[in-house]
Length: 236
Image (cartoon, rainbow, N blue to C red; front, side):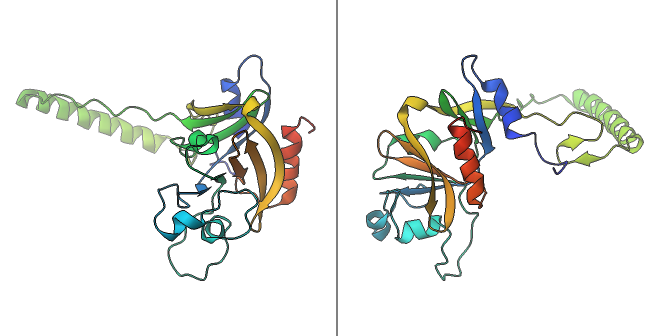
């Protein structure tokens, strides 16, 4: 483990569990890609040809959108982006899979015995802007600011502990504050399976309305998803 890494996904997820549910797995997500008819691979309304060729089908074997999402080499020399950690598919917009991820950002994905949960980092509110000070107030504030700056510099020089990303030597690894961004009851999930989209394996989550999610989470070994499927089924 890199000392700059955040706490494990399961550790971050456990405070959000309900009393009656059990954690099956948790994983940090990343870029979300779309294979939804009517949307481009970034989830924006598609125009022209892309509106027609977006498959929206879990077993679709070709197409411009699918090639982009499955990291196929299109031969173009344009800008590159990180391969999607999650691929949403559906034969039209507005279905469950798309609704689940909209607005969730880079989520922490959590599967329990009761639901699929997406957690996002709590963003602290912007500081309130202070009213304009008088000339005397500014002078006093400036003096206090200099004193605090000198104190901070002295502490920094005296402190020889090492830092690793957001973590500090001799202190517990920092826990981030998360909140529930979205959730889906297990009753709306019809099945899980290890499946391939293009050349990449993943854990496929199929939903009651025909939409679904291909979860990759940055892994490329089929064994990783076999283990994830076993955890999903309570067998590991």
